[in-house]
Amino acid sequence: MNYDTNNIFAKILRGEIPCHKVYEDDAVLAFMDVMPQADGHTLVIPKAPSRNLLDADPATFEPLMVAVQKVALAVRRAFKAEGILIKQFNEPAAGQTVFHLHVHILPRSEGLELRPHTGKMADHAVLAQHAGLIRTALGD
Image (cartoon, rainbow, N blue to C red; front, side, top):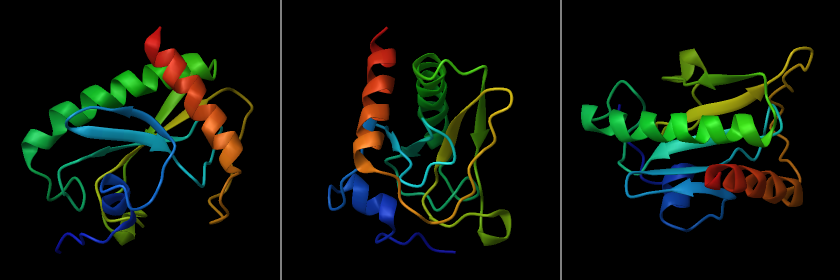
């Protein structure tokens, strides 16, 4: 399958669509999921064009996973989470809906259920607040 340069994450990387940025370096961008399944649900994407894990250049993985760990630790601190769920989907049969490699980071605590993925966008003021909490935690 080919990489679609007009997918929503490619547009975010080009600055055509805004996002609530949490972290960025030369290789990756992390931002809030606009349809979060938990408060603090963050996405980390490589800047290199990759449809998913199955077609990515292997050189993409080291900076991506270093950033995933860094952001996951900050999400855990920011939301006082007991654990972190890391999810990554490859192709429609596995649940992938945006065809740019991305990793989901979800803070988890006992007794708190994940919200269903309904397609409804969260309040942008809340997402901005959550992004600020994570950015602060990254500075710790």
